[in-house]
Image (tube, rainbow, N blue to C red):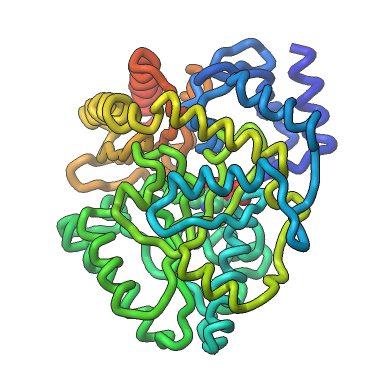
Amino acid sequence: DSQTLHWQALSRDHHLPPFTDYKALNAKGTRIITKASGVYLWDSEGHKILDAMAGLWCVNLGYGREELVEAATRQMRELPYYNLFFQTAHPPAVALAKAIADIAPAGMNHVFFTGSGSEANDTVLRMVRHYWAIKGQPAKKVVIGRWNGYHGSTIAGASLGGMKAMHEQGDGPIPGIEHIDQPYWFGEGGDMSPEEFGVRIADQLEQKILEVGEDKVAAFIAEPIQGAGGVIIPPESYWPRVKEILARYDILFIADEVICGFGRTGEWFGSDYYGLEPDLMPIAKGLTSGYIPMGGVVVRDEVVHTLNEGGEFYHGFTYSGHPVAAAVALENIRILREEKIVERVKTKTAPYLQSRWQELLEHPLVGEARGVGLLGALELVKNKKTRERFADPGVGMLCREHCFRNGLVMRAVGDTMIISPPLVISEEQIDELVGKVRLCLDATAKDALG
Ligand code: PLP
């Protein structure tokens, strides 16, 4: 319709959207999303769409929570902005720091606020190098990340991440960053059992530490479950082995909780789910349910003690701890706690979603159906027995298009289809989601298998 064409034309003529093929921008394909409620979006043509990605893995409370709107409005009237530089505080920021400390793993009682997850990861990179310099070991600078990990789009975030396409643009990664393989058994495990593969991949961390030199490695950074890389759920043997290795060497562990945090796995943090004991946790997304930008780094007490000895940390953002964002985050956490949403994910919603998700394994296109909490992935294959993939271009994009046409947002990472719905999704809505996925798989199979 004419409204849609209007917005599409403005987008084409004036907007450079993120992660978008600029060659294809002239096409009329730009989706215009105009409103949302609960787990649903509406586009400019009035189509109702089930948002199985919670935006970008962030709208944990679902759309349209009036309490968050009110919290923002109240705070804007009271104190719309003030900075936290030069030993300043305001009530929302410090109340939020305390609220996060209350739900964070034991011994993590301080928060440095940022405006996004990328800024949180820039912050951890500077912070861990600063930490080792204070300790008299300025040579400990190297941070080890993982191939296919995602830690943001700033130059530090893209470098810590392991997306090769991102490294190729913008001349990354910056010096002092190394990568090891991801624990992606389905794609890269070959003939190994998942457990054997998990140990093999974890051992790469030790090999890399020895190769670089323990006296040069500052930290290891990883998402408890790789999200944007394709919901890579590590074999059970992986994290215990990594923990063993981390305990053996004097390096810091950064658990990037930007996706896994705030209930996604059925625990407050992915680190709780796997029993990890990180030194630093970048957070964002679910912190405010995406209603307003905010991120941060939760820091272990021992690290804070060292930072204290270092005097001024020359680091901060105009919007660090922004009062309106902090007020929204506080209200978001209050609702998550009072409505026991994280517990409900663990005891009801996740078991239900995961059991229904497993049913999709019967489909001829699905080689693996995996998930934890409210994260799920389907591996689309040409041959279920051999795990053989479709030749390039794969079927993931095709499936994603069928999803849009059928009123479902699902993400494709190559031929891995992934979901991360709002935590408040009901069982009835999960039935709708799984039903739609099946429909889209059928349509994709028709195209791909004939
Ligand atoms: N870390 C992880 C694990 C993420 O998934 C993301 C975003 O998807 C980021 C960091 C970057 O966060 P932001 O997009 O808020 O900068």
